[in-house]
Length: 560
Image (cartoon, rainbow, N blue to C red; front, side, top):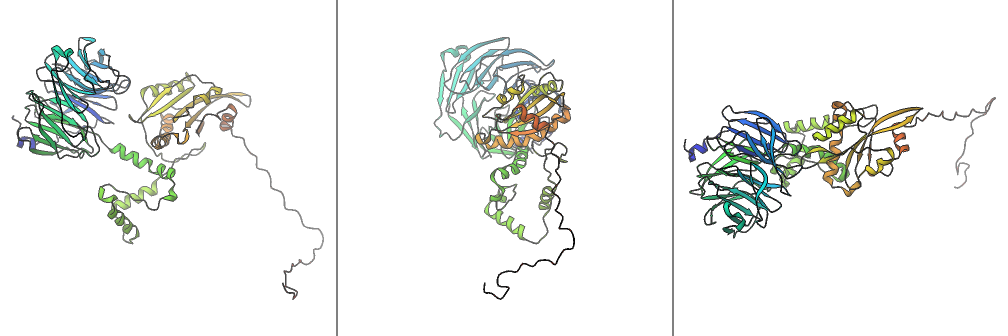
C-alpha cells in the first residue's frame, strides 16, 4: 500500500500499552518490521509482536539502566543499547536467553547517539565526551575514533558507507567510513539563528535528505549533498523545550513529529505543506516516534505528566508550611491557563463569595479537603492513611533491607535519586554507636536505618532506629520537599514488606547529638510519675466568725 496524504490522515490509534511506570525513552522496529522493542527510564525492555499487537516479554536492566535501544543488522533476536545509570558502556544483548553477548567500553560520558549500519555488523556511537566511536559487533574493541570538536549526534546513510555528525547544533560533518581518520570530507555550516539545540539526526531512506530534530518548536530537512535547508517545519507545541524525536516515512516522502499536546504532525517533504495532524491520545508530550519499515504502522510514546501532577499535589502542603500559611491570602486551583489568569482569579473569588451551590468540581475538591488525613508519628498511634510520594526502591536497596532483616548488617544509608525518581543505596558500612554521628552527611539529606544494641534493665536488647537527616537550608527546596514527602511511604513499605519493626523514628539536622545516651533516652523514654498536688490547707478549728469585708478607698466617706 502506498503512503499518501489521505492514507496518513486515516491513521487511528490501534493499541495502547501501559507496560512502563516511567518515561519510554526509545522505540525501534526489527528489520523485518514484525517486532518492536522499547526501552524506558524504569529500566525495562519490552518486546512487542506487531502481528498479534501485544507485548511478548519484559526484560530488565536494573543495574545499568537502558536507553537508545537498537535492533542489530538483520537480526530480531539481538539488540545493542546504552546505559543511563551506572556507566557509559554499550551492551550487546541476546533477547532469546536474556544474556549479554559482549560489552563495548570506551566512552567516558553519556552516549547520546547510536546508529546501526544497514549493511553489516558495524555501528557508531556519539557521546557527550565529544567523540564518535566505530564498533563491530564481533569485537569489544573500538574499531575507530574521531573527534568532531563538539557533542555529536550521528547516523549512517542508507548505503552504510557514509555517516553524518551534527556537531554543537551548528554544523553537519560527513565522514567516509573507509577513511574516517582523515576527517570529514564535507562540512555544512548552518547560518541560522540558534534558538534551540539539536537532539537527533537521521538520513532519509533514499539518502537524499537529512532530518534534524530539536528541543524547540521546529525541525529541519537538509539536502544531504549540499547542506542547504530544504524545509523548516514548525507549528507544533513544544513550549517546555522537550527533546521530541522526528522521523521519515519509509518512502522518504513525509516527515512526522509528536508534540507537547499529544498530537502527531505530518508534512510532505516535496511540497513542504502540512498534510495531517493525528490525535495520538497521549496524556503527555510525545518524545519518541518511529515508522515501521515494512508495514503501515508507526509507534509513539509519551512523557506522561501524571507523576509530575502528583508531585505538585503531594508537596503543596509542604510548600505552604515552609513558606508560612499566614502569608497566603487566597488559595485557588487550576487545570487550564484560563483558570490562573486575573479573570480566573476574579471568577474564583466570585465563586467563593456566591451563595449558589458548589459545582461538581468544587464539591469533589471540598470532599478531598475533608478527607485529607495526615500521618502522625508515635509509638502507639498511626493515622488511617498515608500521604506523600512512593518512589520505588532500587534493587541494591531492597537487598540491603533483606540483609538488615537477617541481621547480617546493622546500618543502611539511603538517598533519593531525583532524576530516576527512585530510592537508592548509598552504603551499608558496619557501624558502631560511637561512629554513627560521622555517618550523617553535612551537605545532603539521607535516610538511615541503624540497629542500636544496648543494655536495658540488665538485658541486652536491639532496637531498629530510623533517622531522617536534613542539614537545614543548605539543601534545595526541591530536596527538602521530596525527602519529606517520601519518608512516610518508605517507612510503610519497610514495615509492611520487610517485616522490620522500627522502634524509634527521629529527624535531625546534624549528627553531633547522636550519642549512646541520647539514643537510649529516645528508645526508652523516662517514665515520669505523676506527683500528688499539694493538699489545700485546712481552715482554723472551732467556731468561725463572720467573713471579713475589705473595704476599698472612699468607702468611709473619705475622698479618694
